[in-house]
Length: 408
Image 1 (spheres, rainbow, N blue to C red):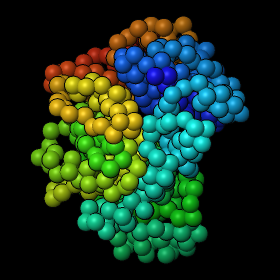
Image 2: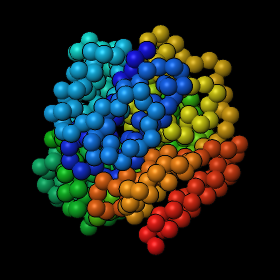
Image 3: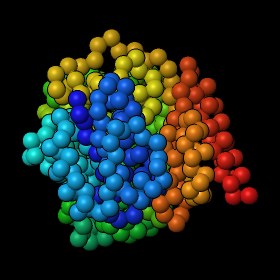
C-alpha cells in the first residue's frame, strides 16, 4: 500500500515555534511508525518542515516532502491525498486539530487509519469522558467545570469543597499544557491564568487530585471491541502554576498488582466510545483500591516507541488490520522490557548532528530549532527493566560526551 504518515509538529503546520520537549515526541512517533510500516513493505510518504529538513534527520520514508508554511502544507496535503491508499495522522487533539485533519483527509476520499473524527471529538472532551464513564460505573476523579469568567472567590469555594491538592486543567488538550497541581488557595489565581491561556472552550476543569501510580494502557480497537496491549509506567512531573508540568517518558511493561484490573478498565473505557479504532491510549491512576481513569487519548501516544520494542508482532500492521479488516491481534506476548525518556541538552552544532544520528538509542535527536535547549528522546530495551534502564542511561552518557567534546 501507499501510505501517507503525517505528523503535525514536524510538518511545521502549527507555524508557531514548537517546544523542543514536545517536538521530540512527535518526531519519535513519526520515525517509529514509518519504520514499522516499511518493515511490512509499504511505500511511505511523509512531510517535514523545511526548518527540520535542513538537518537531514534519519527517516526511512520513501518520499519526504518539504513544507515552508501552513498554506504550503494545506496545498501539498491535498495533492498527496490523491496519490495514496490510506492516511495516518499524528497530531494533538487540542483545539480540534487532530479531528479536523482526519476529517479533511476523509472528505478528500481517503481512508484514514485513525479513530473516526466523531469519536476523536467525543473522547477529546475530558468532561464528556468523565460524565460518560461515571454513568456506566467506571472510576473517574471528582471534577467540577468552571466558567472562565467565574469570580475567583467562587473558584476558591469550589476548591475548598473538593479539598486540596487539586488539578486545574483545560477541558480539551494534549500533554500537560495548562495543567497545574494546586496545593492551597494562594496558588489559585496563577492556576486560573495559566489554564486560561490554553482553553478553547468557555470553561476549564477543577479536579480532585488522585493519589497513586500514574500509568497508561495501550489499546488496539476495531471500533467496537478493544484489546489492551500493555500496562505502561508514566514518568510525569506535576508542577505548581508557576512552572510547567510535563511528561518525561516511561517504561513498558509495568508489573503491578492491579495489572489485570487496569487492562479491564481500559477495555471497558474504549468500548464506551463507538468509533475509537486503531491505536488508543488510556491514562489512569492506580490507587490503593482500584484504577481511576484520567483521560482517553484517541491517537498514537509516545508509549508506542517503547511498546514496539517489546511485543511479538508489528503494532503498525495491527493498527492497519484493526481499521481495514476489523481484525485484532492474536497470541500476543510481551518478550522484553523497554525504557524511554527525554533528555534536555544544549543545542548541538549542525555538524555534530550526524554523530548523534549514528548513536544507537537516540531515537529522536536534539534538533536545534529554538534558542533555548533542545531535547532528545532515548529508547532502550532488554530482557529485564533494570538492564533496559541501565542501557538507556549509558546512551544518555554517550550523548552528553559527544556534545561536550563538540563544545570544548
